[in-house]
Length: 185
Image 1: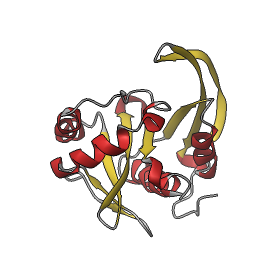
Image 2: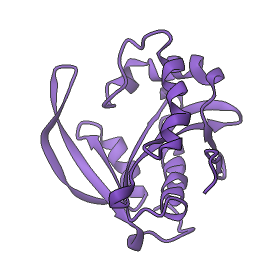
Image 3: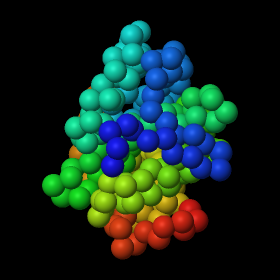
Image 4: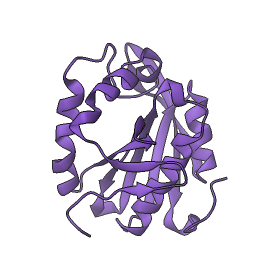
């Protein structure tokens, strides 16, 4: 594996490392209250300058193989972010993603996640990829189902987001369940 974080391509998306020039779009898209409301770590309001600081962490986390974060773009326009947080000692990684509101319902999260899952199994040699979503965000669960991920259970009252106790639905996919080049369901 080379030291440079790769760029992935799908039919519609270029999934590439973030650049500092992406910061204004990150602040605009991630700063939407509807995006922040259904993610574990995005604050609202989104602080000015936070996107630059976040993007600046990506090269070192990739080099350490503790996180790989990609910008999802369509025709050079940022539409969202997607990441894997590997735990190489256990051959597993957590998948996370967000999509800007103007791009909801267009299948970009599913398309991007399918490419990142393939990257995880093929290039990082992972055995398991898992993800979770707040149960009040069923759209994210539908993405996971389309990816062929299996519902593994509910983590009851597992998280607190903005003073609200949240149940999390847990999904996972194993290398043995995944087929290279298989179409997303």
